[in-house]
Figure 1: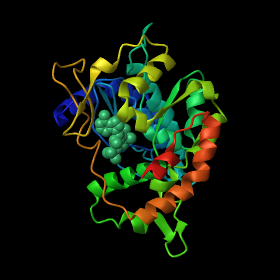
Figure 2: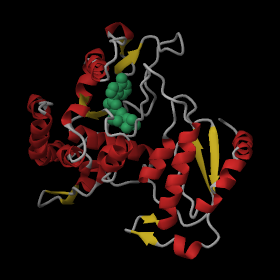
Figure 3: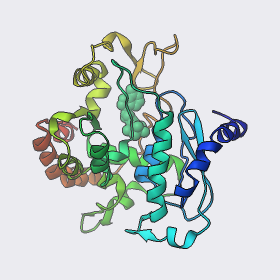
Amino acid sequence: LSTLDTVNELFQAQMRCFLTIWSALKCMVFQTGTAWNSHAPNLRAWKTYLEGPCPPSAPVLLTCRDHAFLCMPSMDSSSNHRQLGGRYHIGYLQLRGACISLCLNVMPKTLDGQVTMEKTPSYFVTNEAPQRIHAMAKDIKLIVVVRNPVTRAISDYTQTLSKKPEIPTFEVLAFKNRTLGLIDASWSAIRIGIYALHLENWLQYFPLSQILFVSGERLIVDPAGEMAKVQDFLGLKRVVTEKHFYFNKTKGFPCLKKPEDSSAPRCLGKSKGRTHPRIDPDVIHRLQKFYKPFNMMFYQMTGQDFQWEREEGDK
Ligand SMILES: Nc1ncnc2c1ncn2[C@@H]1O[C@H](COP(=O)(O)OS(=O)(=O)O)[C@@H](OP(=O)(O)O)[C@H]1O
């Protein structure tokens, strides 16, 4: 889906549906983010409704597979825009249900032998996600890719920096008080790396046997090895093996020799594998110290030693 015309056409096609849910739509929601994905079953809508804040007015476009839904605000806005818990609106909650139903109606059925996947990294750190996902599919299998939380924080910062070059340095953002060595754990780049805290939330709803933890470090040095674990976990035949990968020196990362949809080798895009800015080694050291107890807790909870402390010792 590339043009506004196409969106409009799709919107026209959905008008009937839209009218039937008109009464349910009290407020409108949407943050389009990346526009459209016509390949995989697109659950971007889910992401929106699981996480999105509700803007007070203006129509929103909901995209779900090759369908577009335009959600309009209700005319009687006053009661519907009352905030619930500071984040959601009454109408928003109603709309969420209505739009999820719409989205489900245009999703193809998963056939025998097919696995439907959805990838939203932020679910891992979203408080409401485990309960909602459990209510939706309690037998679901969950895959979490984790890397050294210090490298993760720098990677997160690098991504933000690429969009907002004016932000303060990593060293400034990382501390509440640098002289006292007080880390700012409320900064999302740092908070997300407290994996034990987030996992605890998930373990209230899902047994460990339903969660696979993939090492982000191993994924780079041995992609086939990590992919073997993923395929086993999903109960799939090991189709993706070593012969599918090669190390691309220019990219500095493993790439696919021959993706399914083309004959050319393919690496991940420019936004993956960016060069990180140089960070003061003292700050890195302090962060390693900050994360150490949480990492230990995480190793204990998962029964896996990701060896992030050894990495630090090796340097
Ligand atoms: N094969 C391959 N190619 C490129 N990059 C690779 C690869 N394997 C793992 N990585 C690491 O993945 C990091 C980006 O993944 P993200 O978690 O940011 O992706 S996502 O947008 O959240 O889905 C990205 O982090 P940065 O290096 O900070 O960009 C990479 O280190």
